[in-house]
Length: 123
Image (cartoon, rainbow, N blue to C red; front, side, top):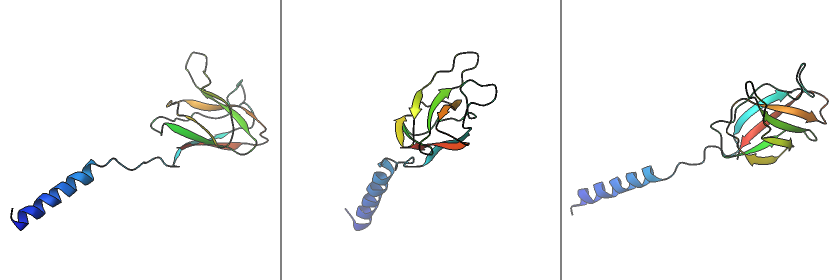
């Protein structure tokens, strides 16, 4: 094999190897979603204290952040039906599976004296 052919073969193999490597994790500690919640249910609502947010397209696990010592639930807004509660009793730094849903909201906050922000971080 000639030198030029050998270089071409090595370069082709190296380029192929680089292309075949799995992508680096995109989600490490990035923000999936953040929402502002009231300290109690919104006017006319029994549980809801925030607007809707989505976790679709985020990592498989989420780390929830909120001011300490606030405790809250995450509910799913279902049109014309009873809203399920994927998570209850969440606090700062709790890690859960991603429900991979849109139309989620914060509900039933406890220990909050003012509005606060909840974030779901990709894990």
